[in-house]
Length: 229
Image 1 (cartoon, rainbow, N blue to C red):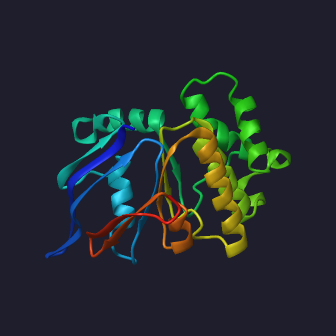
Image 2 (cartoon, rainbow, N blue to C red):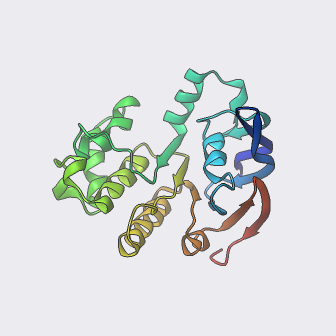
């Protein structure tokens, strides 16, 4: 298997007034293509910051990120955006659906940006897979939290990304709804063969992945094989 993500000696520091806060310190790990991978740790351990750096949403102060064979530090902002549009999918805790678009339109947007053929047909098929085919014309405000996250799942997989980053995907959902969303996430991921990277507080969710990276105070505490693998 080939490495889809290589992170080497990554560091990130923020300045607040006269104080400097080191959020990530000398982080090194890699992920194989097709792997499922969880990043866990207490609040403030640097999980979301690390996810953003891996996805090219932010730039590190030290170290490097190689994503899909490309060193992100070599790219301009426009080139980063093109790489993300071509290779990367995202799922966020707060869904981040566009409020003025219907469920179907939200799913179809990435496909239209890529110039895909038959985007509406693909979008309807994905909404059917997440159990929302009869809600395609509803706006986010007309959907429950669980339904919105299912639309977000369909959108994330619509462009068949090489790697999908999920930041606390069940954080705003109750246990039962979260469990259903997680099952859909893993089912869709298995169908697509996508590399899946999840940031989560949920130990049970992390254990469903193949490997777990544990952070504490911006440092790696452990990089271990999960019980599920």
